[in-house]
Length: 491
Image (cartoon, rainbow, N blue to C red; front, side):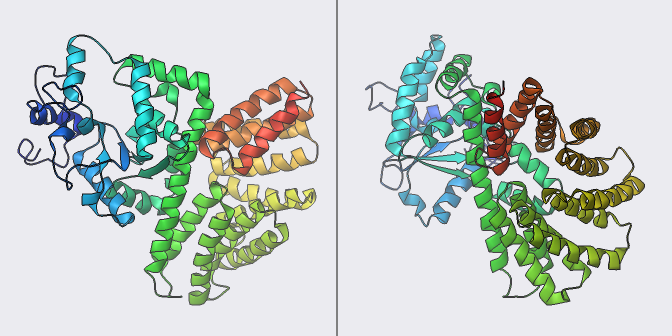
């Protein structure tokens, strides 16, 4: 590869070194193996792997690389090297099954020349035996903002098959530069939106394949055996677990780089942003751990009444609310409120956010008058600072609608939710978690009014989004699924 691409070897993609559309021109892989005898059929022209000799070069595979031919050689080497390093393995003793090198590409070309395609049933059988015999899939994701892997039907089918096979391990990795870019972006406010975009990216019906017949056959298997929705949820759950592990490991490494108890602003910011991600994903214990790191550092350095304390206090209050610890949450909110008022005044946007969150806690405790009071204060601030149609102002309207819903004023609540829908759809998109929450809220008002079919339509749309983004075990997903079961008995 370095001879053919002297200035860009590491950036060369697999399909550039072996283009299977060029039937009469060998790429690097076929050229290397064109004169070798295939040990499987005894004919001239072998797989690249059959040209290798010596224990340092070839041996029984312990992992199967799941990737796309769009990936570069440099990224593939990087992922495999990191895998060995992270698992304390000697690279010379780790053998990898990789299709471009282990499949006899000469036989692939022969069939293409004849217009033949390997029967899917045969291909699937060989593939399943390979997955089960190797027992470990290493799936490669890049770029993290839109992994090409998730848009190739064979790739996600490999990942799904491995995840459903007893005794088969699944590992997901990304190239170092992608990991660094992902972790650097944690402090970016848009990072969470990008993250949720990745978590909800899989849709097997939209995935592509080199051969349309393969795509058709795989979709038939998926639809028949599991259904598209369950398939997509399974893949996104795997991606979600991988992301959580990646972030948690990064947070631990960040903390290890700081002297015990010493204040480090970058560390505080990182843990605060990671806390937001964990909170959004319903990982409350992990979120509390992250926020407590920030809180303890800030408090030790600046004292308990410093303005820097308001954010970790308010953030921890949000987690406590999610855990149902309402009095503890209100106590933290009150501390944060005092700090903000003393530092920035009574019309600051930070104050409006705290008031909104306090209103939510009061609502959960059925203290509706207190809830309406603080929410109206928050709404007045947001309207003055941002205007009526800003999405942050709409958030306060949702809070008020939730209180109205709790009071049994279903029509009034539904009207306010509907005021918010065009604002949020424009800001977040029609398949966002925010819109799912709105659909769920409207479903409740419809249910309370006896409009069960309309409510079911909203709940189903809501559930589909939650399962894809949050996974099947998230509290919101479970709650929505339970609501659907209750509703089924009414229809």
